[in-house]
Length: 79
Image (cartoon, rainbow, N blue to C red):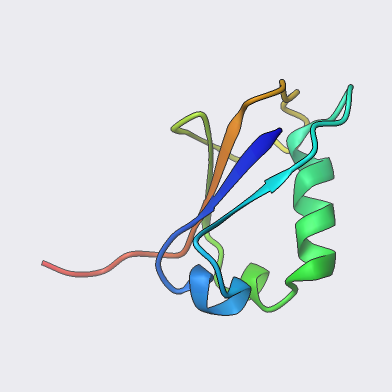
């Protein structure tokens, strides 16, 4: 399983703060992004940051492993 976490305004577009996807051998981050973009296109209008196992990345070719955690975040503001 891959744990997917959503933060900030992204949760409003997904109606959840987390979900799980069944891990598929050979998956890369782009495969997960494509699958989620199909299900939640409005969420990807506000997503600005992606982290895999708590490390920010923009490498959609990054290979994934079973039990990885992927977080999708919008821009944060505040003081």
